[in-house]
Length: 349
Image 1 (cartoon, rainbow, N blue to C red):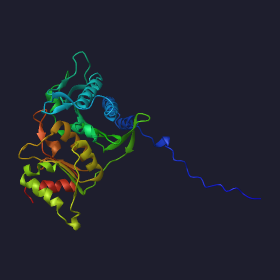
Image 2 (cartoon, rainbow, N blue to C red):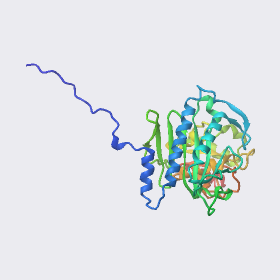
Image 3 (cartoon, one colour):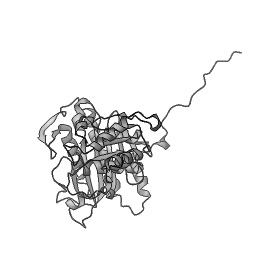
Image 4 (cartoon, one colour):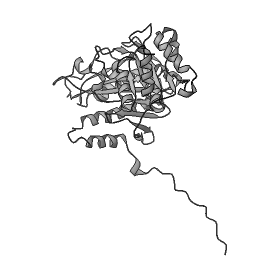
């Protein structure tokens, strides 16, 4: 009697429900570790995820609807406001103003603090955000992102003030970004490491994809706008030249990678290691990137992942801000690479 051949079966590739962790479940699990928590920070994080989904939806269909290009207005930094900038800014403002967890907000797109309407409840937290970083690249289909940070208020009660906003980066209780690229990814920290979530567009959920992100101690990539090379100060120019020198023993030369969208450049640095830098130049001796909206939240993420963030001379998160739209030089990434940059910037090399 002949036997019919039966091909060996493979275990089907399925998503195991016991391994699916949504951002809501992750935030709740973190909250349960703090019995004293009232849940206000968790609610803010849920709303961050919602805002990321709303903006992601518009970014992904940007070529299909009339939201590309400039609005014809100029923001506080003298930059042309993009239509998607305006949409993202409104998303943040409308999502958070009625939640009751915030006392005040600030946006890179707004000159002044964003007050919570007088007839609405206020809470014990403060939100600062860059609604759409790198938006000038949208027309070229380059990755962009939203950056945000959360602080506890320092004033005792009532609606918040500028004092609540002008806090050092080390006072952040949470920070993160949403990168809109080939996939949409939300990365955040509440001070206990860094977690990354990728948006599944089929079910509309951010799912835990990178449980504990750690940046390598040393990388092989440097990222800066070398179009300003002739405006670099000598210390910065020598540092870049050092990275470009051939030295197999130390892993040099480094590869140069620069996208021109901070979220994309820092996200790559976080994943692969190396250094992202936007140094002071002869044209902008105080730096160009914003302390409150870019350097502090990204510096917080980098440090929580085991890296460093510096002006080249001082730790970013130790800086006491003096104005809402303050600019700073910035070096962030792998610990060994940032330490090397500091040696050049402080004259030790």
